[in-house]
Amino acid sequence: MRSDGSALNLRRWWRSAGFAWAGVRQVYRSQANFRIEVWAGAVALALALALRVPLPPILLCCALVLSLELLNTAVEAVVDLASPEVHPLAKVAKDAAAAAVLVASIGAALVGLVVLGPALWQLF
Ligand SMILES: Nc1ncnc2c1ncn2[C@@H]1O[C@H](COP(=O)(O)OP(=O)(O)OP(=O)(O)O)[C@@H](O)[C@H]1O
Image (cartoon, rainbow, N blue to C red):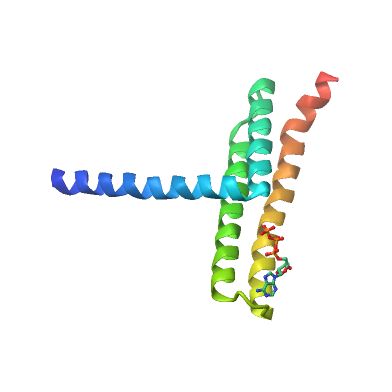
């Protein structure tokens, strides 16, 4: 076992995690949709805990929607950098990335309905 190599890798991993966290903070600051999705996810998780329904589907949906929103922001930034002027391919890239978020959000809403719906219904 090469302990010096592992320590180096751990330091590198920690440095990369710092960059990734900076990306999350930057997107949270700049993208209203991301902020809405973060807080919608937090509410869904709190409800799942309070109603004692399975957490994994809610956690997976939150991770999926937030990850795709982060990627959507990355695609938007790259497209704006590469093609500041109007171009049909720039439109395809931006619209497809936005569609990925939309599809995941609709799926997450349906999962939320199926998992949380019956427990919420019983409350009323
Ligand atoms: N360089 C471009 N060339 C062609 N179409 C573009 C370009 N930039 C944006 N568009 C299109 O214009 C519309 C709005 O784009 P915009 O980047 O403002 O999206 P948005 O969803 O409003 O983004 P934001 O998250 O920044 O509010 C989209 O249909 C997008 O595909």
